[in-house]
Amino acid sequence: MLAPAYFPRWVNAHTDSGVVTALTFMLDRSAGNYAGRLKDEDIVNIAPGAHGHFGSCGDYLLETTISLEQHAISDQRMRRLARLLMARRHKRT
Image 1: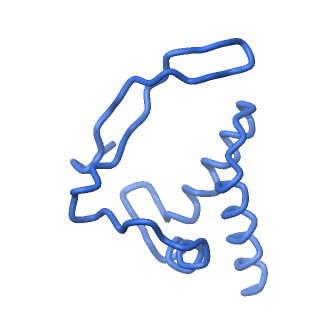
Image 2 (image 1 turned 135 degrees about the vertical axis):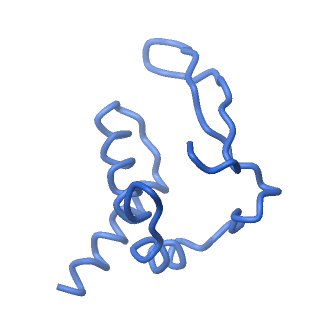
């Protein structure tokens, strides 16, 4: 991660094949760019306009959701946010 607000951490991830060690990046909640807990509707409204080095937050959200599903990782909130974001995009077209 490019931003200094993130730090790597090794965690135990529970999979269908058992527990595996995985690398994750954690956000330092004391960092100035930590927005706190946001409502889903706020995330969906902010994400398309928020951009970083590698593109929009909205695109990152969608691509992360797809990647998780391709690896059989179920994250209900990410899936819900992706659906809401896609619905918002379709309303604008």
